[in-house]
Amino acid sequence: MVDDVKDITEKAESKEALDRARLARERREAEQRKRLDELRAHAAAAQAQREKRDEDRRKRQADQRARDDDRRTQKRDEEQCQRHLGQHAKEDDRRIQVSSL
Image 1 (tube, one colour):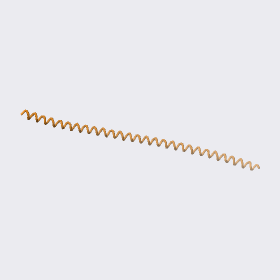
Image 2 (image 1 turned 120 degrees about the vertical axis):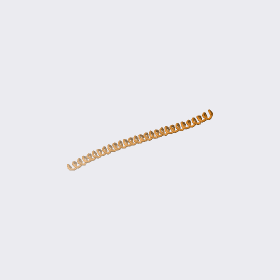
Image 3 (image 1 turned 60 degrees about the vertical axis):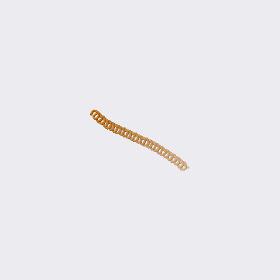
Image 4 (image 1 turned 135 degrees about the vertical axis):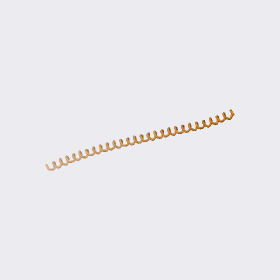
């Protein structure tokens, strides 16, 4: 009978030890899942930030190209206007010379 009580006590202690081990393992796994979820969230936020930074950079580059194109177009138009005015001035000078003869 003492042996039966001893066996029952050992089995109960063994079951409690197994339960404690299982609970400890479940806590560790839950903590690992939580850390993994946090890492994934951090990685997603970092990726979104990189994408936004790249998008902003591309937009600034496109804006700069548009401003450069506008300046080139304006300069070309001004040069054409100056040439055109120069041609009219030469024609006016010729008319004045012809009319003064």
